[in-house]
Length: 374
Ligand SMILES: Nc1ncnc2c1ncn2[C@@H]1O[C@H](COP(=O)(O)OP(=O)(O)O)[C@@H](O)[C@H]1O
Ligand SMILES: [Mg+2]
Image 1: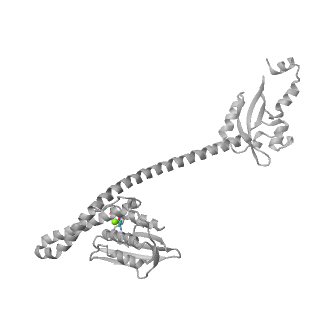
Image 2: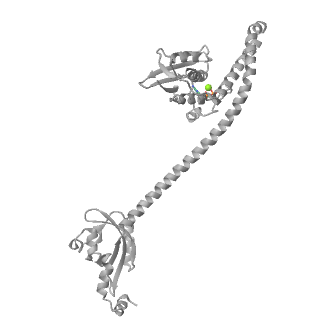
Image 3: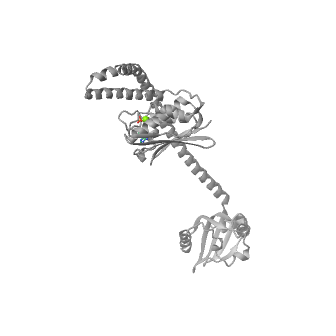
């Protein structure tokens, strides 16, 4: 049964019913060409245009720029072929504000074809805003979730790594500790025997004896590295001349004839753990000497600003492959046959305990340390 007939039966006035029905809606009627011929009060209220401004115009007056050409051609295709179109649309008011409507456009036909289009719309701007906010919140949540997940992954990977390192560290330091005493005995006896043996040996065997001595020193260095790595004693800071630290460090550097090591002329006084910094510097200097491989230069430079001492150790060696630059401060990264790959890890840990930084760059190979002056 048609609504009008049903209403008549109930003895209700259809015009009043229509008015009530459209009280809350935005209603517009156009002719077959889409020219507006009727708008209700709500249409004017929401669009901020007067009835006169709207009548004679077409709906393009409300275009917001939100929808594509295809959106409108789909809409026109539907209604010009007599179909009802339903959808959401963003419109623009006379004063440039935007509003969203839920829209239904009904083509009205007579026997000659389409006569009018009636559009009934409801304002859904608030719902849209809430929806947008929800979408944005969801996006944020997804992003936060991704960040959290990758942080958790990284943290657990770090944890596994540090646990593994701690286990390796404990084991290695136990072995190193047990080796230290027998090695000291070998070292001492070898030193004691050296003068006597050297007089008796022919040049070839003498060479072997020296190699034995160097191997003992290498072993001793490996043991010291491992023990230093496992031992993280607290640092004891005292005002110290950094040049004297460098000079003491030089005593542990295995240099050779073709290598020139230049220390800075100017001294700087800095509050640090002198013994530990001596270890750091001898480590860097030994690495540099090893890198120049018998022939080249090693330069140590110092500069200060009001808060920091910057120490640069440069060498004329071939440098570090770009891909490995980040790895060299990781435990057990070594390219040497008798290396432990622990030297730079220990250096980094000591420098950071002082509140400083250590970094590396190539061309020329430069290790840069910054240390707070006090
Ligand atoms: N001055 C340098 N020039 C080139 N490579 C270097 C230099 N210093 C360190 N490296 C690289 O970093 C690695 C790690 O150094 P380190 O942690 O001191 O351990 P190790 O000396 O036992 O190998 C070295 O094996 C070497 O490949
Ligand atoms: Mg080293």
